[in-house]
Image 1: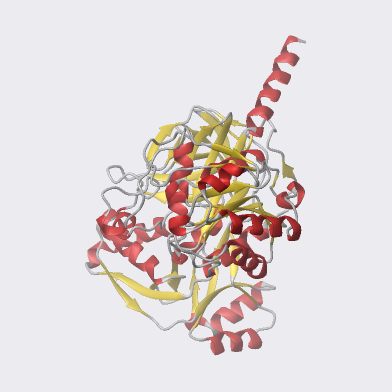
Image 2: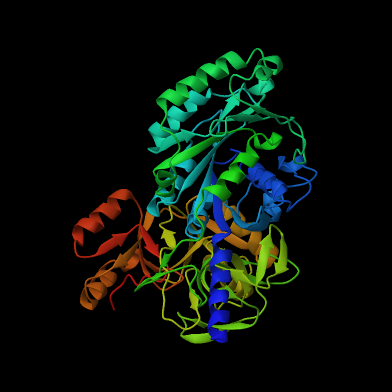
Length: 542
């Protein structure tokens, strides 16, 4: 009886800890203010004491979440960081995704590991191309979205116009939760429509305000005293919004059909705390995850999870490889043994780490929703599932067909092995796609030019290999699957000049132009040409 009570208590503790987790990503178009919002959330969470905005090359300090040297030089985020902090009895896992469009593939994978997302909109520019793409990826899993309309400390579009554009372009219903008072030099703060109060902030603060004045009620005369010029327009807009907009509905939000909208200025702390509060109050705790035959519940006792990102050489002093691992159930404990299901063997997780931007701390334990880093020497790949015994397979980690290509070879032929090792590791972590043609030529595929620059930079800095990069004329690539072995042999023999394999050995058709691709699809109606594939997906029939 005593043992049963202890077990029941342990299960309750696990369920309670899982319920306190919030795991989310911040998504946006480049330069919308995503990195600044990230740091302000960390500031409120007490994870950092001083926020340092990215200010391109001349910045004296750089955003905590940007750790790669080329990020510091350019003032952009090109990798995905994971940051964990505690706030108001919750453990928050924040995934800061690349904003640059060239790194959308890495961002898409990160979105498979979260339970919610914060979408940052530049109030001056409105809805931009990368935001549209990222929201489409979130829709694949009905991920709940919280919207933050940023930069109201500048002269920007009116809030009504922004709401209309979000609804028309992104096809999602908006439920404004806060509303701005003024903009630019006359930006006074944000008013919470649900709580019917204004929390006034002072611009230019780098630390969280602790003595902000609280003003309640839209008709409060204190508002007229403080902001006589801005309040008449503010009241008109609030009346219109309350009549025309649907109120916030938690069920619609959790279904991904409605987004609560917050206005503010991340750089000045306006509205940031409201976003953090919404994440804790409304965003879902870790949800069930489908793993082949069944759905895994987050409060189940057996430990399970999947790798969604590989990062090599995070510490330049030590040539390390860290697998970013989303815990889906159970509890991680140092030294535990798990089954590596792809390799079919047991694996010991010795000293997993948790992340605070570029700082790493040994993790004593982790539960569903947490992101841990697992040191490894190549045995873990994107999409790998680990479990305490059960044969599971968490799916949904995407790869996307590249659109830009270069051939690569080492300047020094004696460094060919070093080049291949570096490309293999960069390919496994998703930084680039590495294709090998039938003639043995190495081709790099990307969705944006900056990816090639990053690979060149990292090959030289981390692997000490100088390479020659030669542009080649290719339109796109497609993964292939066949109805049978005979069709595969026939196709690959006749189309040998267009064939390659990826890092996992999957067959790839490389089209020199759109007509070439359309002609091949027409000529081979029984062969399937795939623009995307999932990790672990066996496309070719042997």
